Length: 424
Image (cartoon, helix red, strand yellow):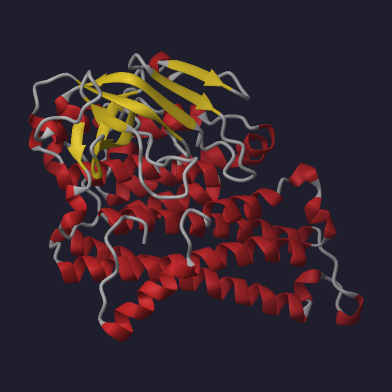
């Protein structure tokens, strides 16, 4: 693997031995570990954002804590937690640092794809790595085209399509292409990569590729104004040799009803909720410690200003409503994970979409209200409070919330199940 940092030199994944990872037993253990990591990470969030300091140390703690294996089924040695706990863990981490909350999202997403579509042998292979502390990144999205077709190919040596099922194929197969928005790939030991057949881009697989493979180049070129240390840059693949046991069906998992989409989306909602709560924390501190009441309020402290009190109440209600919908969505998604049918998966997708609508609007409201209610001093660069709005605005662009309103309305009004493509 070649690592080409455009902005900051960093150790590549091949230089990081797997930590001695703990084994967490249940959801309670997972949440305790998440809170411990959040307490460690929160004090450095401003500096990491301002100076773009990559969170290698925090991610090593994530791996060593056993958090990466919490969704591995209990029969394989993991905690076997469901969507509710995943969302809670992600929200806790995002409240400490929005970037830290987003980095593991694709890790758990890839594990859900593996759970749904992988063979027992594939699951055993990747689960064993994750239990040892391996981190999974992602190489899913591509840029440069206005369609949603992927062009990173799974191919034979002559460039032609694989024969039959790649997972059961004994011929040499390769991956070639370039990806962007590869959140977590910079820090990963394995990079789950969405690849397509050269002769039919509708056929796709998720190839779990070791980050240190010859022909893999990770470029640290993410320069978005928010979520600045997610490592969401480029990964290119130049004739990367892959093994059959690394290739998990992807498109086939959307032909039938599966929970890949709801699980992916509930974690995105949790990231936004965590960012919103982080802005809330700093808003309250700013009102209590720095803000001045408006002259017409007739009070001595900003916290006594009736209009400030009203707006704080509004932000609180929005955040708590978003949190309630997120937890409801978690319960419905876990039911669908246990018994996936057309109806249960559709209900999970709609419940998660409802939560994402509110986590989107609540995080943006909280990060805006922070400045309005804390006053001009809250814009000082040394405080780094603008990171909340930048993080919320950047991450809420992941997929358009306007289409979630449509899917929810169509479900209730016309009994129309939402599309199955993982982005609702």
